[in-house]
Every structure is written in C-alpha cells, then in structure tokens.
Length: 326
Image (cartoon, rainbow, N blue to C red; front, side, top):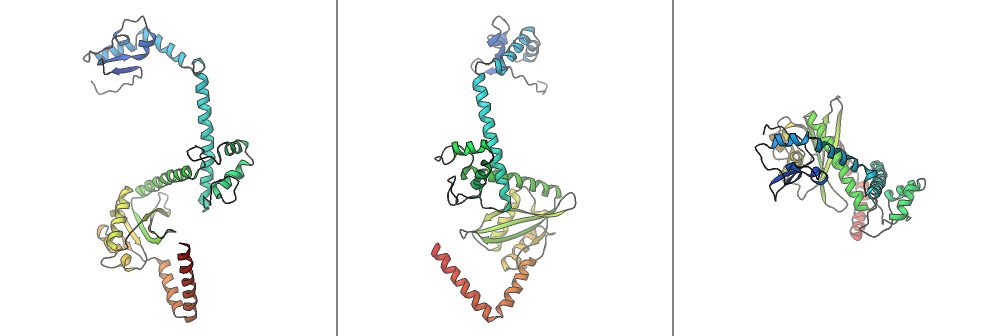
C-alpha cells in the first residue's frame, strides 16, 4: 500500500482460493488456528497488519526454526542425492575451467580444430592435442578423456567442437562488451574499415575502432567481421552505421576515418568517407598509409617487365590450383 517492498519467502498465493498462505506453517503448524495456516487470508484491506502479526507470532517463529533445522543437508532424507549432485556439478565445473584455459591459450593464433575429433589421432587439431598433453600429467583430466572422449554425438563432454565454438562465441561477446564500455567512456572514436574475402570467398567487412582510454593510451580494437554482398558506398555506409548502432555507440561521435584509396571508400563526394562525414562532421578522413605504400610498390613493380611476367605466371598457376581444389 505504501510502496515499500518486504520480502516474505514463506508467503504464497493460491489463485483457486484467491488467498495467501504461510506454506511453512500450513505444513508444520498443525495446531495453529491462524487463517494463514489453514483456509488462507483474503482480507486485502488489512493484509499488512495480519502478515506482520503472523510473522511476529511465536508459532511462526518456532515453525521457521524447525523448518531451518530440517533443511540442513545432513538431516534431509535426500542428503545423499544432494551430495552426489554437488559432486557432479563440481566435476563439470573443473572440466570447464580446463577447457576454457586451453581456449584462452588459442589467442596465440593457433588453429583450434583439425581434420577430425578423434583422441589419440595426430590430426585432431591443437585444442584436443593440448588437452591430451595436459592429461598426461593430470589423472583427473586423463580419466575424463578416457570416459567421455570419442563418444557419439549428443553426449556432453565439454571437448567437442560444438561446445568449443559456443564457448568462443560467449567469450568473444564478453570481450566485445568490455571494449564497447571503454569506447563509451572515451565517447569519441576513430573508424577503420576494410573488406577482404574469407577462405570460402565470401567478402567480409572488417571493422576496427580506435579510441583513447582513461589513462591517455590510444589503442585500436578489432570489433567484428561482417559478411557483405556489395561494395558500393551506399551499402557499405548503411552496414557500418547499423553495426555502430547495434553496439550502442553514436556514429556522430566518430572523429576520424581511415580506409583504402578505392573510389567507393575514399570518394570525395559519394564515397564512404564522404557519407560518414555528412553524419559526423568531425570525422576527418586519412587514407590508409599501408595501402598507399602498397600502391607505390605495385606501380614500381609494373615498370619491371620481368617481374610482371613472373607474378602473372604465379597468379595464373594459383588460380588453376585453387579452382581445381574447389
């Protein structure tokens, strides 16, 4: 009535009788005549007074003490089941800790998966290989791999590629959230964008944000890869803006841009940089220095006929082999 919330875990509501009960007293206080222990209480105009009265009663307090004593694990009839459950939970938590530790080791750029997921096989990938190495010195992990390794799909073991990919995704989301919070604290950021095909020949847009941390350190953070299906400036602009928006950031706080010198990116009037600058006037554009140096190298090599012939042959051979494998 007064807007104050008071937690009463012993209180339950019955829709069928439109009343409230003290479920602990209903079960344990057989001789009590209080309505909360028997038929239930439904006088909503005086409910607060009745609840306080019951809560402070000797009967209720004695029953709560009795209930607490019965709730102690060693006095429960299912204490053995509870003990086994806790042991099982602790077991899988220990396995999960070791799995996550090996996944974190993968930040060194190692490929996680191999040609198969067969324990003992030299082509099962770095993740399972490292797990097997650790198991040589830890009987706990060795027993787990013996009991749960090389099992059919559908059996939980915390070492399958499906679980590993899910854990990597969860960890990536956590890292991204931390980065976004840092950017929000910094408020202003610079935008670096480039596109490149992946191994399946699908073009991906790589987005990197540059910002200054609270300690004055300027850092660049990779945000994510986004599959794209067009390279025109309008499409790229909408993709970048939508991505920034989903991160909870404001594109108007962008104070710098850096892309390659392609017309769809660097175009003075309709390129990506020009479209972003219309939305964020402070977003000054600087061409990518590495790309500019690369162009200088390409132009220099084009003036050497022998080099042009050599790399043309190499490129033709590469396309031939690549198409044959595809």
